[in-house]
Length: 101
Image (cartoon, rainbow, N blue to C red):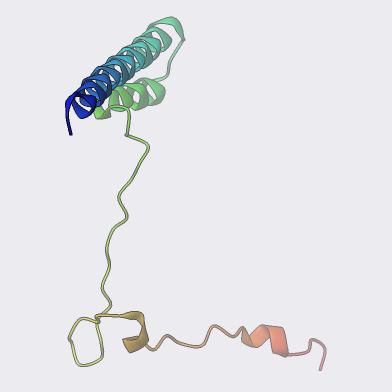
């Protein structure tokens, strides 16, 4: 393993730097776009606050982590999987009844 891996590593580092630079430029343009959108449009307080939150939250503000929920079993303990939970029947009784009889 001579000089070839060093050359490849150097190329990969340079490429990684270019990608990071491009991402940084794109984020800056996005923030600039949002800021100009806020200043140019006639906004209501609701849209102004939404845009301000979007800028402060950053690029990934539209991703929301799901909330983890655990169901309580009849004995008071928490369930560890879906098989432990017995849900009520989802059958709709009005579906099976006939109207007019």
